[in-house]
Image 1: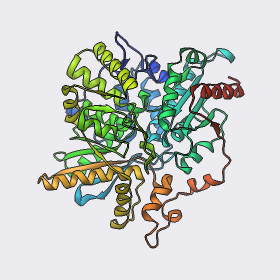
Image 2: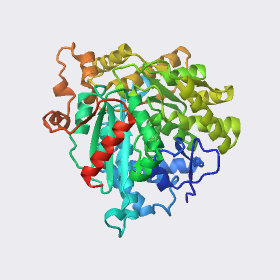
Image 3: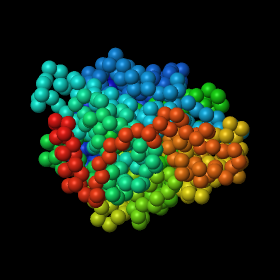
Length: 510
């Protein structure tokens, strides 16, 4: 039975938040991110038992280790898991596609949820969690006595629509999603703004994703605003998202190990911007998943790649607009969680002192734009992680190469193409080093239909290719004819955003 509690990465004293508090708060009041007090350890016999489970059964077993039964009883947790994944189009939820078995490359398709993006795996669960906790808190309450949650999030594309689809129509929850005007794909914008439920609000902010993310963090840091409106988070800063994403690392590993043999090395390659997706892999590995390496695949916004190569965490100029916009991020929020563990385990040996170190580093980042970690920290990071930087030209090439070399004419989205490019670099290096028996699971984070410009740039010159016939699902085609609801924020300013939130809440009667 779990005895798990949670604390902030910036806490310098003792802390013990419950799972419910952690999920509903989202971001700690000191600006830190919540982490579990201990990462559960899973022995070989348990791993063996888990290898035969369905995705839903496996999700329950993993989540049970992080959530006390006194907080969510078994039957309730099973129902939450079942309801969260009943909306997916594929019976395996996250199927493994053997796109190049000769080279040991497999694609983990994470886009079979309602918004065609990997964020659905977590946010369908998070939406149901919010509703579950609020219904329990509000039992017997009426009117102004009821607890309400104002969910505020920033998106560089897919988080917003996944959050909206996870929260639309949920009682006692209002959701506000900030996105950078003109910097997400038209389909992504239409997915969000075509949801007309009264509790859903999309705020188009003139600025970058980092501007939006910074505004969200300022809102979480505003004590009075939080007190008045009970702000909650759906971005990957919310621990429940990282928890839910751990399942597909275990599940895909088991599927591939059955195929190639459990003695073979299996590495995960993850397109990464905010570091949440690959962080879930780190937790899985720390729990006992026998994966060999985790490979960070970045685009030209390469703070993570530069860090692993230099030990310096540095913003490095302005955000570059690339063909993989969900990764167009200067500061990777979730990276703070990894740094906390690396410091705690390798330098301070103390939760409180690790919090002090993280506090100092991020204050330095805010003041100077960078900080450098000690040798023990970067050495520990390199034990688990490698990294690659992939540019726009290589992204286009990967989409075209796979389409033309594969008899099924498989189409990658640009983020998944970044991962596939990184995978092939490592495959080539394995061959050069005469290393055999390595297999790669490259995470495919979104359906290609969501990124028409990049896909067409790669494939439109190929005779017979048709985006409408080969790529675009009917459900997404219909978005172009739907009514849209957008509120434009003329400047990336926290006060303008807070005013918009208050105005919309008043319209809802909250």
